[in-house]
Image (tube, rainbow, N blue to C red; front, side):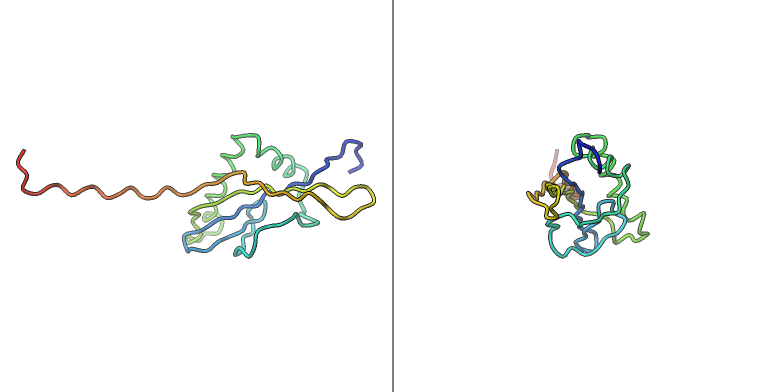
Amino acid sequence: MFSPDAPLRDYMLVVDAGDARGEARRSDERGSRAARRRSPVQDIPKRLGQDSLWCDYQLRIPSMPAYQQALLEWVLRYPERTQRSGDTILSFEVWLVDHASPKPGETATSDIQRRRLMEWRQPPPPPPPAPAAAGKAP
C-alpha cells in the first residue's frame, strides 16, 4: 500500500462451474458463495475483503501445479460444503481476472484481462460391455 514497489496489477480468481442439476454456477474467488451465472466477470470489484494470506495464496496458484491440484480438489468438494448432492460439480473453469492498478491520483483501472487458468470436465461413463455373441461356436 505504501511500498515504493507496490504491485502494478490487481488479480482475482473466478470459478465457473456446471453442477449435476444442470445449473451454471459462478463462485466467488474462494467458492464460499455461489450464484447462478449471469454474465462473465468483466473486472474486479473495488473491494474483495481478502486478507494478505489469501492474496499470497491466490497469486501462487497460476505457477504452482500443487496449488492447482489443491484448488481442483477443493472445488470438487463443493457438495460436501453445501450438503446437497445436486451440487456435484460436472465441469468447471478457473479464470484469472486482472487489471492495471490506477495511477497515483486516478481512480480508473485499465488493461482488463481474463485468462483461463484451469479447466476440468468429469470423464464420461465407460461404455457398456459388448453383449456376448450368441450361437457362435469357438
